[in-house]
Length: 247
Ligand code: IPE
Ligand code: IPE
Ligand code: MG
Image (cartoon, rainbow, N blue to C red; front, top):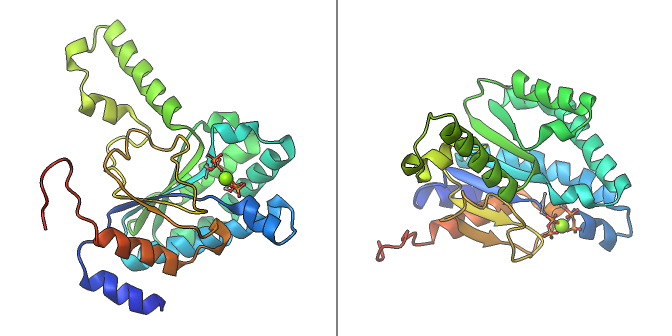
């Protein structure tokens, strides 16, 4: 099945350059099995691995994964602790294999909110994978779309304050460049697992024209086949960007 969908992807139109995923449903996956939520999060790591491999096979160049939101800090302390420890563990364990795969990891979000050893592990995975040319992987951690825009507004206001920027020169391009995603192209395709029809404060600026693919599959059950299915769905869309139809 996997290779069949891959063939189809290659024969159809262009593969999305940038795919972003809201990885949701770990808790429900565990609950359905009568297991603690942490087990769901741990299982979700396998899907991360599988999705990275699938993205490389499909020829996707940028993969952005929403792993922990600003709002997730308000979950019970025990759950937050287990998510952070998983992140630390993942960063240490996957560094070498990601490097081998040519994956360059970027971590976007308020990393300074994490404890020192987690920050250090995150730092090492970023440094250790620098220069990877096959896939750029953005891990969105302690990330919130509104906070990101606010941060940009403050950066621009400061430049105005210091006389380096005129108010009239604040345009989309100027704001875009100050986002955590900087000069990176916007996501072409946004996938959300677990069947929730919402954005949950994710990349509010960048997804203005992303194609949305919502699947009922819970994140720990997500495989490369589901990724390929989403890409095929994307390839059937007519992206008009406010213009008239192109096909
Ligand atoms: C997604 O799974 C992972 C994070 C948000 C950190 P959830 O933990 O949100 O799982 P559900 O939505 O409760 O099933
Ligand atoms: C979104 O999932 C955040 C991540 C996937 C990291 P949530 O489970 O936190 O979102 P809501 O609460 O369903 O909106
Ligand atoms: Mg959730």
